[in-house]
Image 1 (spheres, rainbow, N blue to C red):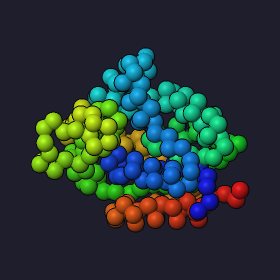
Image 2 (image 1 turned 120 degrees about the vertical axis):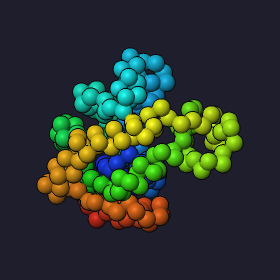
Image 3 (image 1 turned 90 degrees about the vertical axis):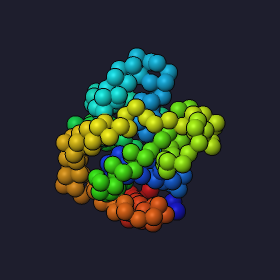
Image 4 (image 1 turned 90 degrees about the horizontal axis):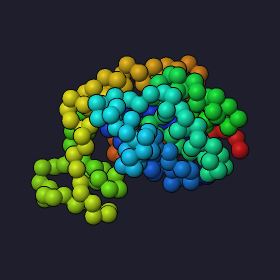
Length: 221
């Protein structure tokens, strides 16, 4: 394993991206940059951006390109991302965001764009059962046998059903993905930078597929 990589992991929400991003960040020794986590932190802190983002996210919509590009531009300019690389999780979501990212990374181009492919029906099932710790953000899967209140094993916070994980909101987000984010697949495919990874397998097997793809596309250091 060679440390360092500049990656994007695409895929429907609920495809297991978050967990795989964490594993990839540890494997390649790079920061995991989750725009979703950055936005939720702003919501918790009640910043101006957080208030604006909460209104959009509670409706199951996507935050606008201008805000997201600004957040990512600032984060990728920090020393750890410049020096080691990163894995982007949740960005880009639209072709205009991808074009802006190409400009941001013109001096240090991406090594690989990975698309974690999981069928929509499976994503719906996973997200409907998802629960999250209100304090630390750890994800859980509900089985129906949990104690109430449900306490997080990591930090002791309350495990909740997210407001935007209702069936209607999930369907809406997936529709938005198909309309706005799916064109990214063609954008990166036409440039020869896309690798589609079958996400229907054990987590360890999916991780092996991801790291093998990165190793095959990594730019010489």
